[in-house]
Amino acid sequence: MLLRMRMLGFFLLLVVVVAAVVGFMGAALPAEHTVTRTVLVPAEPERVFAQISLVQDYPHWRTGVKRVDLLPEQDGKFHWQEVTSMGTIPQVLTENEPLTRRVVTIADPSLPWGGSWTYELEPQGSQTQLTITEDGYVSNVFFRFMSRYVFGQASTLEQYESDLVKAMQ
Image (cartoon, rainbow, N blue to C red):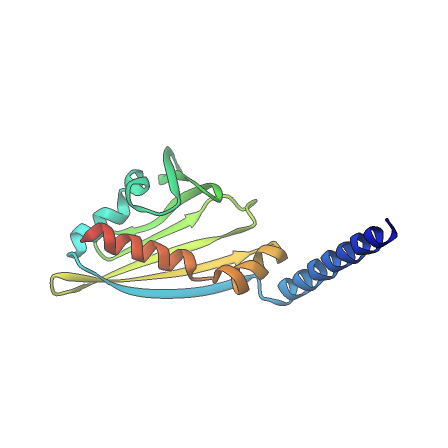
């Protein structure tokens, strides 16, 4: 019995130490980050722009998007929310230049992360060079640690681009 109590105490101490180290490391990281990824999509800019603009179709080709709910416009801007494995994420289209540029921003500052994605399309013959830049922040120090050292800050961008290329083939 005494051995079990000591082992439990050691285990609890280990959990506290690991949580403290993760918290301190996360707090030492900057809250803001910028990540850019570029991919060559096997389709013309018209098709690519249409694919990324039809947010209601995201569940058909984007990994992790279960549902998209279109929301009423606010201040003349298009709003929707993506229901994903990570929860519900409200979005707003903050800039739209057909066939060349699109900026989408997370519309809920209470989430532990947020920011915007800037999509830039450039024709490359019958293909499209798509560059996505994430200007993001992670306010929670534990999520900040995880996004940097476990998931990778570019993982969502890379998954999106991979899904898009598959959808365009």
